[in-house]
Length: 233
Image (tube, rainbow, N blue to C red; front, top):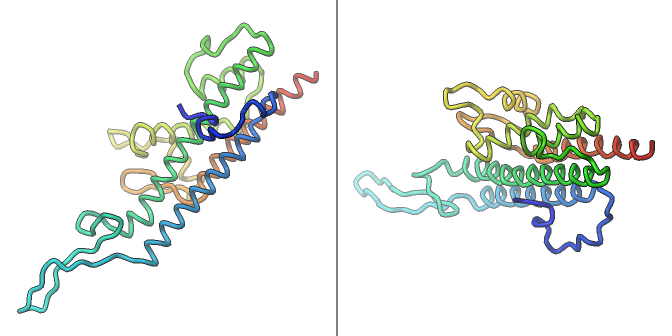
């Protein structure tokens, strides 16, 4: 399981303030997203500046015709569209990987918050008593036990659907029967510059990681602010 502690193992977590806050985690993840985008941009620039190498494999003198292959990064144009792979597919794949990481950290931190709340309030209802798992179950605890219905949760439900597709279905936007997955389609419509569909999967463009991360931050801010007010009351 990806957690903030495993993602950044060199940090001395015992020195972090005990009162829960997502701010520190958010800052670390945002920096990681920025590094991911820098690596992606460097890879795209390398392809554009260095171009494809052409290797001649045969020459037909009678026709003055050269037969060969273009290659870059260990792939050839006989196998794939090199430009599409290195400027679209690979960048999307890198963002998908980072998205799975930040969603996993968000889910872990949310469950951690709920467990800390149960411990500090000596609550009788535990997460395992509620239906579902992960984000769904933690949000149910926040709604039913803490008493907060977060405004940002409907968007998180769509983000969760995309996460599940990335983790289990190679980011496909439709089911096996060809029917579109509604929440993923809605997400693409909401963010047409940061997400798009090709024939089979969702393509992650620059900017989406920050939209997802800022949504998680907004959710936690709602929860933390509400919880702080409850403790003061």
